[in-house]
Image: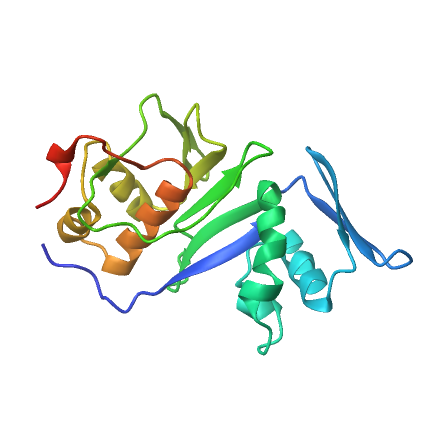
Length: 208
């Protein structure tokens, strides 16, 4: 099956949940973050952390755009955002001006979101008991054991999700769908990180 242009680039975006408010206590040199889970405090945060949180409160941002180009994101921003993972919304954007593909929302205080590279030949599928709800903004996915809720904003993300109703390997999904390979791979990685795409235990489903 032919694919759409391969030069479509996906973008990782970060924002804070809508119920989160960020206050800067200059007297105590701390940032106070209030949410449904209570209050989080960051002691002596650097200017890059303050600016990133300010921008994330307004909406999804590319972290590299929220910090000085010389800042090491993995050393400065990522550790802080990992501690605040229960407050962070992860969005997969794409550079075609048609809006984001999907967003992952934390729904539990222990919500951790880690993107990892997935083996191309290891089958994945949607979790049993997943609940699919139609929203004005797209399709919402929720699972009993997942600390995240996923909203699929665009049909491309729904196509990938539908493939995972049965065991399928990432490489087979990428070959079957008329989407840029990077887009399909990104959607699967986000679903897996949110607990909405789990490895199939039966080795018979491995692609050999």
